[in-house]
Length: 140
Image 1 (cartoon, one colour):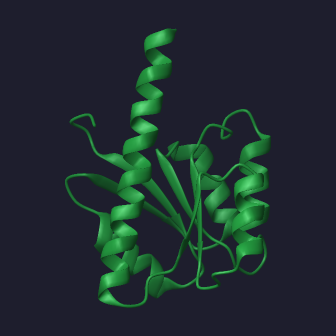
Image 2 (tube, helix red, strand yellow; image 1 turned 60 degrees about the vertical axis):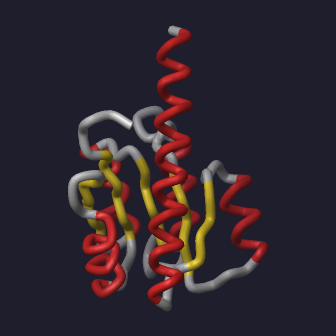
Image 3 (cartoon, helix red, strand yellow; image 1 turned 90 degrees about the vertical axis):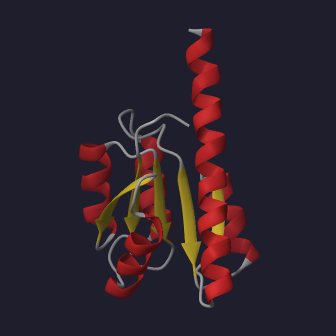
């Protein structure tokens, strides 16, 4: 990992979840940008170019799946790694997310142990993305 903070875009329609994610990740390692729904998330993804987008699956208006499809269909946002997350822990959602280009699917944390596990999982995804980006840059 480089000496700079990695930018995470968190898209969720629940203010409590946005606040929790900001508290959980913001600091020396991460810079958090939040979006209150899919449309806001799309706009912020285009303007802030995050290192990772954490997107809630179930939101009014544009769902997480719809946002994922939109991001992956456009040149300027296609390369943003996306993790969908949801309170719904259904295999069909997980499979669809991965088929559409998400790098992961996580269950929303509820207990303190789940919250720390969620943070560790996200950090692991970011570390893998950083290594892969370095490898690609080294080949260019």
